[in-house]
Amino acid sequence: DDGKGGSYIVMEYLPLGGGSDQLAFGKAMAAMHLAAPSAPEALDGKFGFPVDNTIGGTPQPNTWDEDWVRFFREQRIGHQIKLAGSPQLERQWSQVLEETNNLEDLFQGVTVRPSVLHGDLWSGNCAGAGGEPC
Image 1 (cartoon, helix red, strand yellow):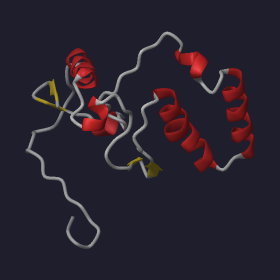
Image 2 (tube, helix red, strand yellow):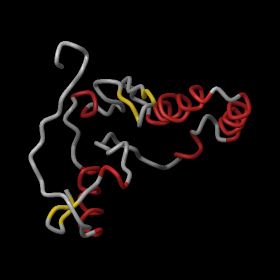
Image 3 (spheres, helix red, strand yellow):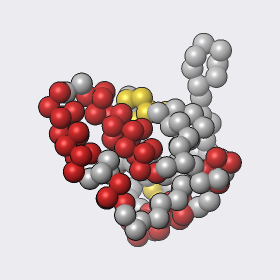
């Protein structure tokens, strides 16, 4: 923080350009998602992140929660629905929640554990250097 509300990120210089090996990229992403998280709360099985962040320019809450379905329902999809401010979308969301037992039915028999995710992956923020993903 520069004391004026701004922040900086310092990164190693990489000669970005050209494409990269998509198979290697996919394997690297999978490895990141399988890595043990470093936050003590996540190691204790909670979902979230130490700070709120944004997805693009949209605020995204990350309050720790021990229940994956509730976290996903309230802090991901439900939060976006509220921000949209669309009564029609809110009605559709209510119907989805009603028909899926608040999304619980969608995760029956599925074990979800906390992991580190790249939450804003798109073609403009992935690159290659020397043919390798970075």
